[in-house]
Image (cartoon, rainbow, N blue to C red; front, top):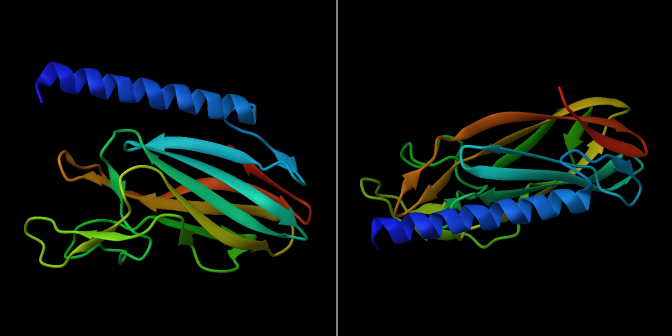
Length: 188
């Protein structure tokens, strides 16, 4: 592929992602939406080539589900499996991760919507578990231990078999405030 065609396709992909992100944010009423009952509080951030959109759903009697959608900004990039060891395999890769601390604790295991596949990387003997290129949705059932503040810690790394990897993101904090009938993301 010549350079100008690659740049044109890359620019078109970025414009498409930007337009889709704007329509999602407009539908949610902005980057930072709070609510209770049936409306899901949502927030997002972009770091190291991946947009992460977090939401809380089904919040009732101090329980609910945290959802994180990890969307690589560039076409052809994938995320590593949630089951990848914390240090990677032979030092390569970082798991897609979401954990909680403070007044919220996990009430189950982090799961992902995508099927895991294995890839091989030059210089690494063991195959690496990754998700297919593109967005991956993870969910974590949670429960609150009373009212208060909590921190959601996000981790991931995205890679392309053609273009290499981005710098891993580890323990990126997102703040959450919970009560028995409400959960809301807090900017800090």
